[in-house]
Length: 123
Image (tube, rainbow, N blue to C red; front, top):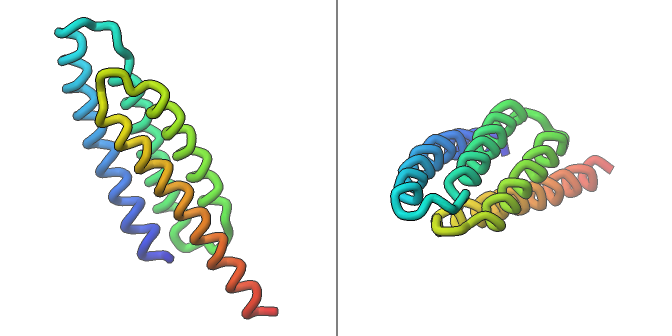
């Protein structure tokens, strides 16, 4: 679990940088075309939430509790809601939103199951 959190944390930080650059490029394109969509601004918020989730994964990689996983679940669900509701002309935002949802929910459920199994072996 430590290695997985380390790898996913680093990947989420790298993806956040990629999302920032991609949303900047899309924002310029949208501004040139018609300038009425806010999807590139929503992508900036999604990137910030990705960055925060990646940092939390790195900071809690050696913790056995679910505190970091709960925090990341909340952050990534917020990223999913923001991204999915503000897609507009930037269809790539839908991909980043669903990826946030999948990472948040799958990691939380996986660590919840793993912690329950660890408690059963102790008892």
